Image (cartoon, rainbow, N blue to C red; front, side):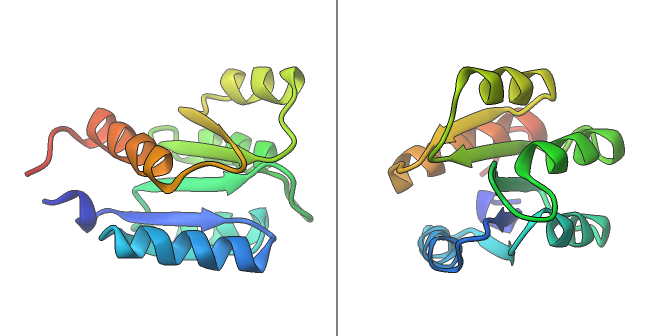
Length: 129
């Protein structure tokens, strides 16, 4: 199995950001699914096939920390990356407490995101070809 055989879920309420990140990661060879908020993300994850989830902290209906809490209750091994333009010590502490494997401040470079994704996929699923 290649890294690119893993499916990523990108969740952000900013339509343009979500689409841009999805396009950039697709060009890097990853398969992506998109969700507009935490509730939609949980529905996608429940249907299976997601190998890594990326989500914004600040979203309507269910924020990123709420999504992370639900994921840990249901799918504890799913690697998760939180993203936010408004990180503070409280958010970082809570994300770490809930088991976020990575927290990236926005804006970030695509190479930083790809490095984090590959590191987490390897740690979770083992070395790839």
